[in-house]
Length: 154
Image (cartoon, rainbow, N blue to C red; front, side):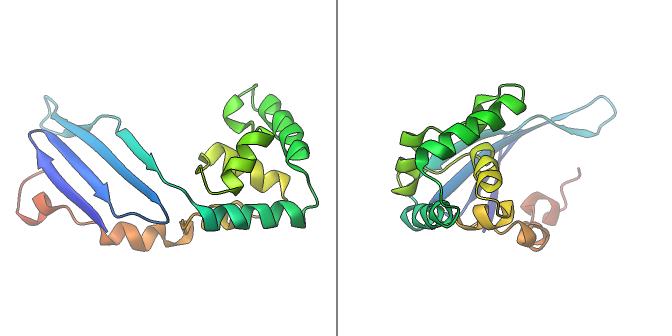
């Protein structure tokens, strides 16, 4: 469930925890000279909580692929190099062990690397963390803006 609260010219969104991930975003709106509402970039504030079940599933995928944590590290370094040496895609063997023990929630970049390395669907990997991308359209319809319902113009 998403909640929208207006504070001055800012709208604060808060979502309910989904598999240990709680996300708050602040969207700032300003009025342009043409009386349009222009959106500035959101400021994310993420709270990562342990994900032991997701970690166990990731470990099972790694074992299914018959890979060690060191092999994952080496393969992820190759991916990072292919992505203009973007270290967001890099996964150290120690960090992977911590994720598999449920201590960290990986970023989208690391999840992408894992899906390539384990040769499985990205949708499957993010699903371990309770994210079903195929539900996005339905969930977008659930979001209602109180200000729009109250007749405030956009």
